[in-house]
Image 1 (cartoon, rainbow, N blue to C red):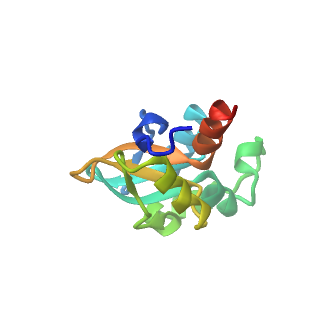
Image 2: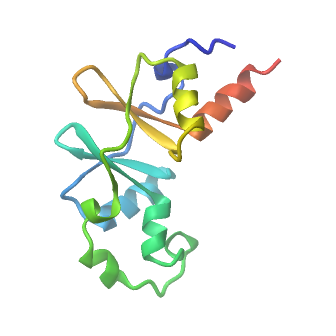
Length: 140
């Protein structure tokens, strides 16, 4: 196993993201369309937050992604992304090692970390699932 490889080797590169002034319906569409659980929230090209499927489910009593028809959409219309997202999330650089990122995820409550370049532009996202997949592929 090459734990010192950069995280850019296993991160998801084509990241679905949303601008912070978008609405929650856009977040829901991205989650469903891309079959992801975490969406980086941007201001321009800089990460200012992250919003998860769990964050949205809390607002809809868990029914949104279980195809319940009776969701109170007024809640989603009333709230903004900044009110729901985790602000100023921990981010990592694409050059950080897989081992460093695994350590961060194992010691925190995070399940996903946006990956940035040197100019703080989002270039990917790494999740606990990415790390587990890497581990499984590299077990002898």
